[in-house]
Length: 72
Image 1 (tube, helix red, strand yellow):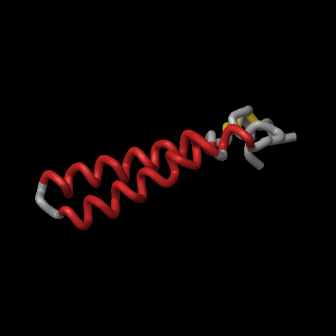
Image 2: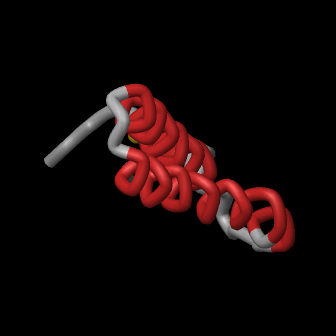
């Protein structure tokens, strides 16, 4: 049995952090001259950011993922 407060990760924050990581990797590859790999990683960064900008605001999350969950 587990006691204490549990906090679910915020899905939008996870998506944002993932996109940010892809962008960082893309910048490193670009700096190193690996243009094709950089383009691929930039593309992987843009897609989730576009999702957060366009689709995520219309999602109804019930209960909100960012609320703390307490076991019974």
